[in-house]
Length: 114
Length: 113
Image (cartoon, rainbow over all chains, first blue to last red; front, side, top):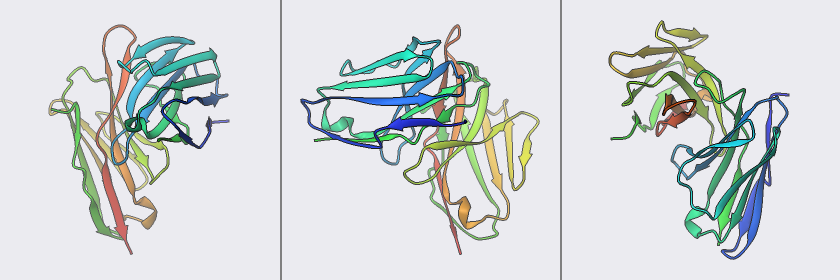
């Protein structure tokens, strides 16, 4: 199974809502990532988890809160988002966090904030 | 200056053409280099890794020039299915075990029948 799955595929939320994005992989990977991608732009790294511990936080606003409940799951909790947070949110995983390891991406959650 | 720079294109080429993409990176401590492909409204997928010795996979050839901090991708005999955005990706170390994937802006390729 060489797949990263993400739910939901699409999400529309108001600025006062609280929602969560979910990511799952069963490849035994120990590094997992959240990226944000705006239209016609490359993905931008948000967070990295390595062995279920937060390794990198790219100065992401606190309205985005990541969580890694176990080695297969990665969540992104959303609260009080702004319309400019509308984007494709991509999850990825790699064997470990290291320069030679390919990152496998999930299909993404397309988020719209009204 | 962006850490990884690419010509955004679009590159419009006929089927069967040979097309080359270039990418430059600014961090001389960068360690690993890749080309990813992203289809419209889909996730990025690894196309190939890039090595100093150059590497080839079928119609695709990737090259790295560390001295010039330059990466290239050559596609021969373009197919309609090659139409996508090609992302140059560089992994750099920011201290300790902190490696980050830095994406270029992507080059859009449209292969015409």
